[in-house]
Amino acid sequence: MARQRLLIISLLPALLVSVGTCGLRLIEGWPWFDALYMTVITLTTIGFGEVHPLSMGGRAFTMVLALGGVFSIFYSTAEVLRAYSTGELKRLWESRIMKKQLDALDKHVIVCGFGRVGRLVAQEFSQAGVPFVVIDRDENELEDLGEAGVALVGDATSDETLKRAGIARARAFVAALSSDADNLFITMSARLLNEKLPIVARADEETAARKLERAGATKVVSPYLLGGTRVAQAVLRPAVLDFIEVATRRGHLELQIEELVLSEGSTLANKSIGETHLHDQLGIIVVVVKKRDGQTLYNPRTEVRLMPGDTLVMLGPRENLDRVQTLAP
Image 1 (spheres, helix red, strand yellow):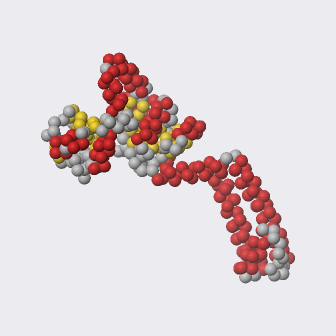
Image 2: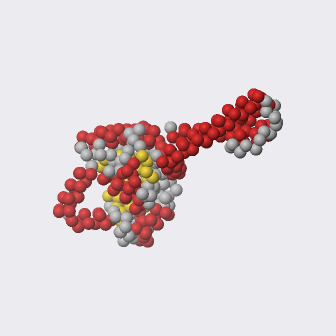
Image 3: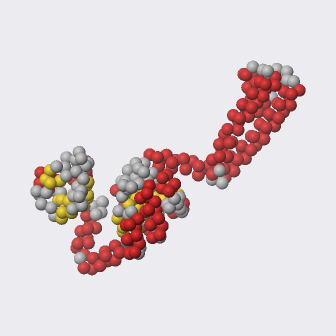
């Protein structure tokens, strides 16, 4: 509604000028430029006098035109002041900027929900330099996002909101709402809008996890289950847990775990692991090879041949892992 009112205000002067010019042209038969000039000085209340003598009908029309100009100025001024004082102008401007940011995004991640889980997910994406959009109903919550990602105020269960977030261009989708029912609904919606989109969904209940998988979730994560497992591992295998935390922390440059999906043009494709010289030249260990047919090879031998579509899980220095990502897209 605010956008429509401001549009009317912006079009009103042009409408009055057009009506006045055409009216004087029809009533008095003046040339177009003289009719336009008379209309402008009448609407602006400059009062230079009549361009040509006016007939009785022309004077009546000019009076109506002058009153219309005065009232339109008062109305426009009042509307602009009201829109400014209520924050409508600011919201419209921010909405315009947000739309440009959303339209410019490509291969981004959509995060639904900015609660405790959503905040941690957004923080990880921000540190990794991954572009992302966060959808949440609470505008105040999204203020804490800052400039790390794009904040979209809206209902994540709405298909229209997901389309605005660019779900057709997204690289992944995260359902991190606090309600299993909401996560189930948006998972179904996301799967219908993008059949090939990887979807990671949060689940609190075990029964909800199975439903989310059937609804189209690629991966289901339970924060409580993961938290309990980590607590147990901290007691049973503290050294293993320390290693996993170090290897998965992006800020640790000496050793990290990374994965790479081999494309058709990858320099690593159609070679054995030994022929890639990843270990000899870069100090990178291939821990797992997940073949495109679903077969998973743990601690693969150097004779294992890598094919396009295979996924490599590698362990090594951060700098060298980044080099592999660059050289073998």
